[in-house]
Image 1 (cartoon, rainbow, N blue to C red):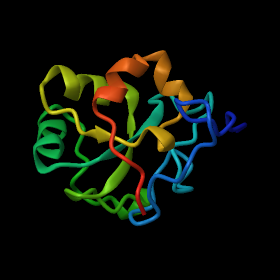
Image 2: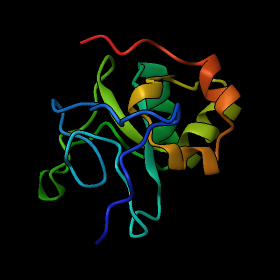
Image 3: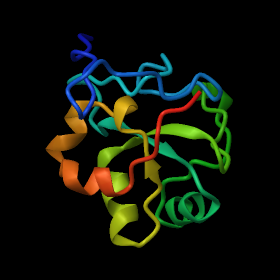
Image 4: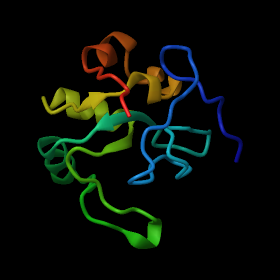
Length: 126
């Protein structure tokens, strides 16, 4: 499984999204991706209660832990590498979470225009 180059939507190096909870398609803390990542887990978001509840209602339960898949469940206030199509769905439903551009992989741009991501951008402060 070859990982794509770790480049963010701004053209710079992809910064970590979250190590607690450990996120990413590769569970490496970054929104890295590859041709095996059919969901394109490339958008680093700041989860909100409204967003998480909306995702659960639409069949994408990010709240319930699944330890057998190393998935701890996402809580409001945590960062998570979200599928680009799910972010776009949340946007269309009026519950799009904020995005960390420097931690969002450039492959997200295949689905979401940069201008739209920029409208929801939040600073990467650790």
